[in-house]
Length: 189
Image 1 (cartoon, rainbow, N blue to C red):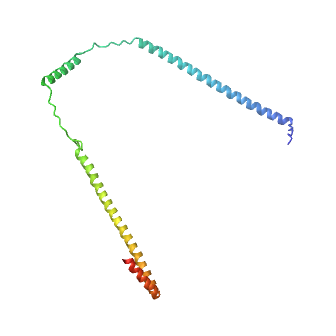
Image 2 (image 1 turned 60 degrees about the vertical axis):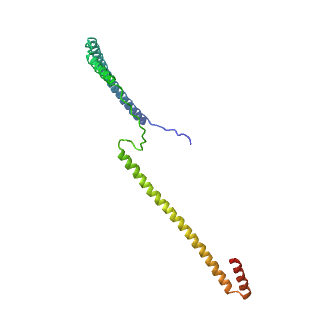
């Protein structure tokens, strides 16, 4: 695709140029307004800085004039506390040592709040004991049920064999019946 040349007439060119100058003029006016606002803000900031410097100078002067004097220490309270403490220590020493009683105790529960510990431990003990007993009983019951089922299956299989034996015996000839009888007698010995 070839670029096409666009021909502008003189009137169109004048219109475009006039619009561009209007836009540029508006841009200059906006920039000038912004410049004036910035200068105004700079003046306000400069004034505030001067006020802050004056206040800091006044504060520094007032700090220089402050004098702090500590009252003389009153150690009578401390000395009285030390004297009473020493008097108590001397009384304790004068009384002599207390005899030491040694005893061997085995405590399952602490001496304080024992009721709560008994309730918690024995409550859990009985609960778990009951659960353990039920589980063992159910295990025994399931084991006996399995044994009974196996015996029933064994008897049922045996009954089927006996029925099959009798069926063959009834439907066979005398020679086969004689041999079957002999085999049965040998098996029962």
